[in-house]
Amino acid sequence: MRRALGATPAEVRNQIILESVFLTMIAGVMGIILGAGVLSIINNLTKDLDFPYTNPTVPIPYVLGALLIMVILGTLIGLIPAQRAVSIKPIDALREE
Image (tube, rainbow, N blue to C red):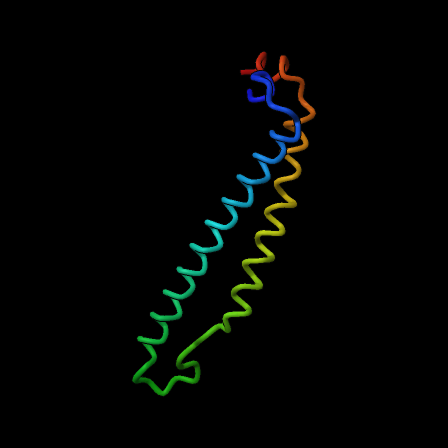
């Protein structure tokens, strides 16, 4: 649709990749928050028990590394639909809608 309105292929590709990175970042941050919540629940449930896995933690560099890997993979995976969107002729895209 944007191609039919005059957007260049580079603009369309950049928009799709930016959306991919944004969605990946949101999913990664939500995963970090959910993981921290689960670890907190486990810690609270095992605080007074003689359980071998008390006070579970994940080092911050591991969390940031996982987020970085997610963003890199999200960017690479976003290239596939971006290239497909750029390769479609604008008139064909409008005809399908």
